[in-house]
Length: 330
Image 1 (tube, one colour):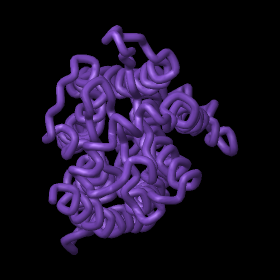
Image 2 (cartoon, helix red, strand yellow):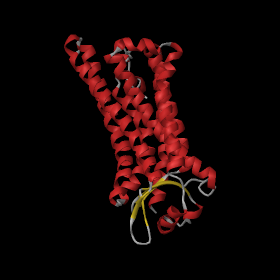
Image 3 (spheres, helix red, strand yellow):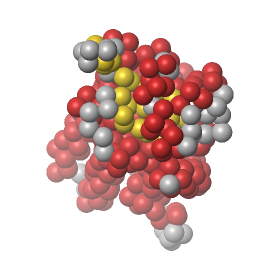
Image 4 (tube, one colour):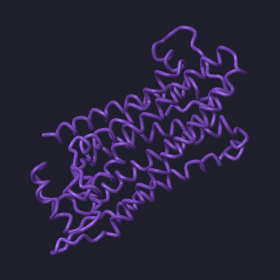
């Protein structure tokens, strides 16, 4: 069955993520920590979080279902039949996804400050550096409450999912844990009535995604323009490093849109038009597990210093302090 393939992808992604993020942490600590300074903590935080994210992913083993005007994130892990705990862990998975995309935005924002407004970094020195994580934590906590209060389990949803759950998983919808957004309900006369609570919860999650997405795009564009404008004033060696950073920046911008924002964003949109594409449901469950495992590879293979260290080249290079502030390799 398809869900068994998805679970295999989730478990493989878990194993790969432990290795790739662990390797990146080692490279940051041994090759770039002194040069990057406080920024190394930002990179290390994302890598450590990615490792924990995959633990939550394996525990919940989330699956996605679109049923008419409703989208569903199903907890198919070992605690799926524990009523309260299973539902809370499903909300925690959503919260961890929110933290993942918000930490990614935080990294792009820091890179923007380092390249375009370096004087602003003086406000993030010492313990004040922790302030940069406040927006990400706010997004994560808000995501949890939108799921917990806005996308809760109701008898109507359980009845609608009775057939799909039995067909897809051989499970009783009344014993399963899930979060779902049912945009509208139909009465006995076939009249549609908007479900305000579900709509508010869904719009809230969509709004958080849009904010994070916009932050990445704006910061990435402004950072690239600043790097490009300064190109004529730089030496050939620095130009080459900026070329590496541009490739890294481009890939790190495209990858989350392909694996995170795209599939999850369509998950909110398609039920409004009662569009059900099985490939979308499957890809959303798979891509959110794959992303934390693949993302570190961009920095490892695109940044020359890390690549040389990985393949044990001679004459290991060092990252200059001016360029280091533009690298985001978590």
